[in-house]
Image (cartoon, rainbow, N blue to C red; front, side, top):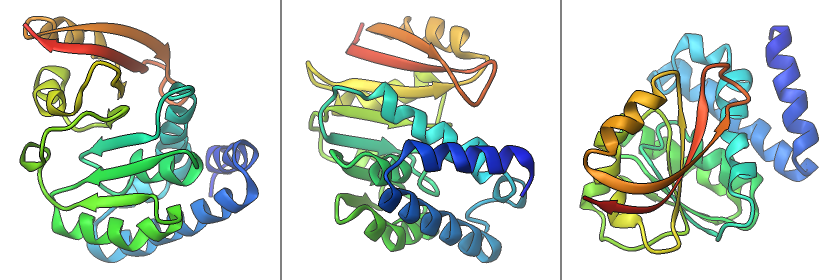
Length: 206
């Protein structure tokens, strides 16, 4: 483990209650073991789980301060950010949406680490019934103009979307505004010097 990984792990230790941090350690161990045999997580990503994926996920907890507990995470993959958020944010009832069967099986195995507050949906977002959540998130799933049509069925009047984005965020926002109206706030990413966390509210198709 290099210095960046150690620093990110220790930052997470300081940011979470000890019991939650221990559950996070167990989750990372599962990612490493499953990733080695099922390509759940690539070799390169297994070498930077803490500095890239865990830290990137945990920053959404701060972004969700004051928001409700009903949270849906689309394209959850190996559990970043949804499962990490569920482990670290006790006031969350998390739905993880992942249509890939291997990844969904992993999420079902790991969900117990969040004390029963996680439900896994092993199907596509567009196949789920429309209902509003307090928070909608997605990380590295699709550009905004493709993501918002998937998300809109989960938005209500009080829903907030939290979407980590990279250096192309501005162009994604511009393209999405051709199809949707929405209120937007941005905050710099702690893990990506060129990245931002987008906070989206009042999402309405034009």
